[in-house]
Length: 105
Image (cartoon, rainbow, N blue to C red; front, side, top):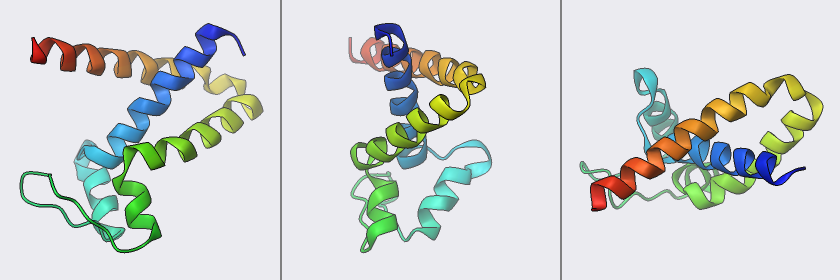
């Protein structure tokens, strides 16, 4: 894997992990998934907690990123045609990170 491919996969994994663990998603699909996994959050989205494996996994972007990386890498090895999806997620991830930097300045 080249350095560019690793960077693309890294940004794509970050974006997907962040979406699933922290964002509502289209039609609130990620929020629904987290509720079904038993994740309870305060109204402001802070102070989330879960009492079992799935809730803890889906509520933690750091934990989730390990599994997303493994699944993403295996998927890209098995189906190289998925690289455009990884590139789209990576570009979105880079854009989100830049937005966070701009907001803080």
